[in-house]
Length: 118
Image 1 (tube, helix red, strand yellow):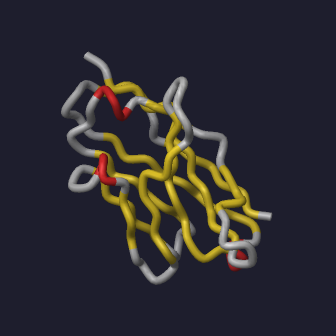
Image 2 (cartoon, helix red, strand yellow):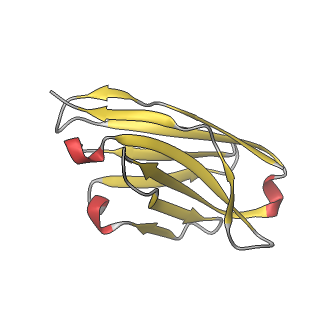
């Protein structure tokens, strides 16, 4: 099993920045990528950004150029730097780990609320 704990959410004004962190523990060697998902009220959960063990990143079109995903392998921590935030970025953000055996994001954190509002 893999345990994921997110932190860093909160309330920010449009145009502001936040950095989310996700600390992983447990059977980390069973994973080969990490991702940040988000779910807004009434909407499906969507993948915002992902990063492989090798550092390859992928972003949703809606956040390209504004969000940056990174990882510190020594600390087993993944970050999501969010700049130029918009009201439509408001959602619960979840950290997830991809299972090497299933190639699915099987492990999830509890989520952290991000609210962008003036």
